[in-house]
Amino acid sequence: MPLEQTEAIVLRTFNVGELDKIVVVFSRDKGIIKGIAKGARKFGSRFGSSLEPMSQVKIFYYEKERKDLVTVSNCDLIESFFEIQNDVNTSFTLSYFSEIIEEFFPSRSKDDLLYRLMLTTLQALKAGGNLDFVARYFEAWFLKINGVLPNLTKCKKCRKVLTKSGWLSPKKDGAFCDSCASQKKEKIKPELALFLQWIKKNPPPEKGDLPFPPKQLESARKILQEIIIFHLEKEPKTLHYLG
Ligand SMILES: [Zn+2]
Image 1 (cartoon, rainbow, N blue to C red):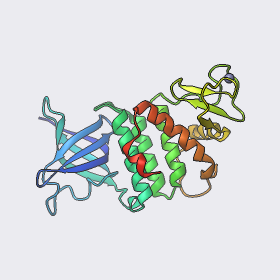
Image 2 (cartoon, rainbow, N blue to C red):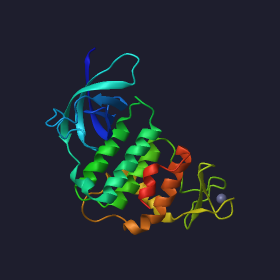
Image 3 (cartoon, helix red, strand yellow):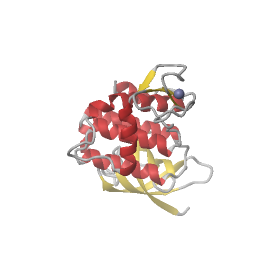
Image 4 (cartoon, protein in one colour):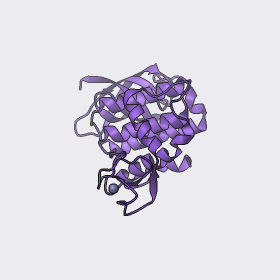
């Protein structure tokens, strides 16, 4: 069994047996990996604080044939994001990101873009970035990377530009104008188009001035989450805590 290694972000862990932990990470090279860290709960364990959720780590593991679970032999901490999780809203938001990554991405499907998105999101929050703004940034890019962000600037039927407002139809994978919309439930405000243009050219904002007041993005939150829920075919469990 050769020793494998990859850079990863710890999504979550849970206890198993008396002293062990199961670790779920999103890795740069191999996507989601689940592994067992033997003795991780022992006092003074060699894993130290490297298995805390959201830690960026270098993980070393052995893979056994025909087994879903790898054996984690070592884990070196690259960067900790432990402190930002003292804020309960940040902590829930990050659990929500972890949940949708795990739900959308099948095991071992590599996605470097998503890995970088998760990492820059964590770094922006650590640098004092506004939680609501950064969360919308993550959701919009997450949908883009998955190829399920519809064009929200033009009516899907008559192609008219939606300057004032439009209506989302996740089922029809698009937005519709006042005359073409068959269902008027989720209203798309013009700020969303500006926001989606802005994120294409900019990293997630750290401390300082935001290009839009986060309040303006309140309607964007509903739209983006509606699309996530549609594709997941259920509401993420963690979203419940974010109200
Ligand atoms: Zn139309």
